[in-house]
Image (tube, rainbow, N blue to C red; front, side, top):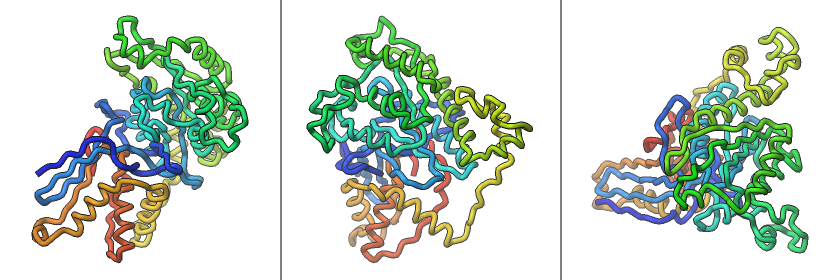
Length: 418
């Protein structure tokens, strides 16, 4: 028997800020995997029980919580939403998994924050759902990287009343009145405040073809804000931070062939991490270069990516993080892993109820196999869901045994993972 439940999930999967949420983290494929994940922003989660029941549950994706640990690297992604799903998906499913693999060689972890997963209201446009106070809060939390992406859309421009939502001083005139949420993010993240000095910008050069249908033009072009968008792009190009144009291909429905875009982002972020003295010391750079690193643009110029041959030499001189495979160390690792995912957990009540019912069982199912498989594409909240289940069971007096054999593996979102 199978039961399919359509519609949105009744809660968020992994993390939330107050009662909102954002996609943070998430797995994905490596750069050498060519299959393109389609409709990544509409995934599903399946609970499969090895008894006569199959439950398919819709998911509302979310992500991992923030943490103050200094071994974490965080990236805030800023762009308009409905025209930039392809670029954001490429980052989440291709670029960031590769970056995670490289960071692991430095003993670092990556949290990427994608606010399109965190829209608290149910509008089609997404951009109209996040308040400015909500977006600003995430920019302040996420460091050190800010990635801004622009195409032909300027984005949602909130009214003064909307701008004041979430603000303590309702009488104060908003600083960014008349600007889009996307421009506010970029100005607050770097242009006006220099709050995130490690900011990088990427401008889509390929325009929407004139032959594109009206519905595509509505999705990809803001005709009424051409002047504002051009000014914002000019300010970005003049701000002194790396800003790249990238080309792609229009398929008739979406943009694709984003490999060059992904390589630019990966090179920029990875090179900046290597230049950070907290992660790779100037002395180690000196050993590899044979001179003062400040004399070389690979160390001083954020616009120049560090060549692979050079960064491989740097990594070769860094001792890999020591692994403690003892049972106490594995238990501590699992506790940290679960704790990170539980810090802001909320919702998932239906999935938890289904899992609890499976565990409790009834007289008619006691003799059947007791195995449950949780399936979903990477980053949809499997670990958070099971961490919450374990917490509930432990609080109820159950004794739990956990196996941590997959904690360090990178998932492949083009296939469901368990």
